[in-house]
Length: 196
Image: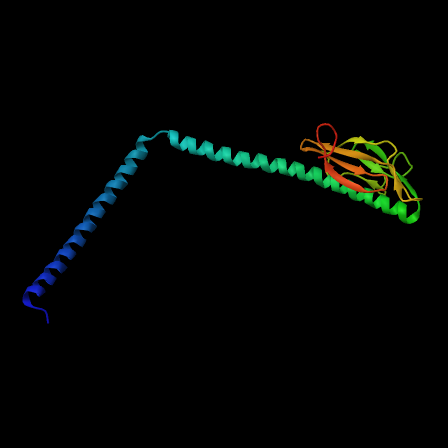
């Protein structure tokens, strides 16, 4: 059991805590009501955006637009690279076909209303045919900037006419280089037309 003096102290402590709790709730309620009234009054006084709100909005818009521009540039570079890989794979197919069947596959460039095409057929209207010996680029924004004349593969000795093809778009340019022995490689073109 507690002594009489300590019981008194405990009881006093409990009463003080109870009243402090009640007083705190009342103070909190008064503050909440005042805040609500203050917010409503402030909203009635405002007729536009503050400078800080405008700056935050402009900053967010700038960050989003820079991200969108970066994504668009990467998308353009990806399209150019995919077209360069498509042309390289087509040339590998022509080289393997020429070597396997001892044929000559000379490359010609065609142009029609849909754009350019590469063909290993003798006909002038090779772009219109859906042959496996004709290639149309997957993306329309890519142009064929340069081709070595007489570029082709010769099956008799597994050789090729050395040269290059250069693909170009807004995102840059890629070159497909062919050696005398038929080795085909891709490289990013620099401004002088060489490879990096």
